[in-house]
Length: 273
Image (cartoon, rainbow, N blue to C red):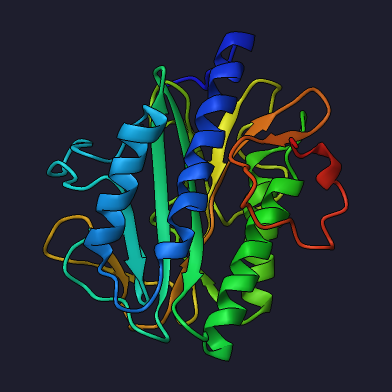
């Protein structure tokens, strides 16, 4: 399948969807605290999307080949859960780390992003893992420009994570996105510079590195969705949806509550306001 180049109309729609996806994370932030269940966070997000934004939660009943329909509106990945954690009765407690992955659909367009949250005071390990993962994402974003290659993104992410003593999950990756939730290209978070597809203006894809504190191997849970670290080490993930512009990149999933880029990202002027 070829990589789609988005039209001006598509890009306008993706800007709206991306901002709305980020605003769900802004909305839910004060509720992410000790004593709340992941199911309650899902309920709050679902109601906000449908009743306030007029958006559709993309994960709900999403069913790629080989899977059962995903049963909830968001993904809540706690501690050693790498991705696709299903919200439920789990009560968050002090010391937990949780990734909330939100994708909304607005006028047919998908806005996909995720952030890490700490419950109470994080451990030094958890804080460092999240910080390094955030830096990995932004280093990958900083490589986005016409003429660059997908391998440039993966290489800088892998290099930064492994230098910190962490490992990059390889079974899951970023992806093209638009009116289709997951489309070409696959955006690997490891690799060699100058390899894979060349970036062109109008491409839109996610960069969403999953970084483990321990080894990179994974294990799949019996629900068919939840993925955990095999060695039970902590895992972290951050995600943005990115547009390739004529001169660089634009981050589509930004809102008032989005954390700023790391100080060492010197080309962040290319980021949408």
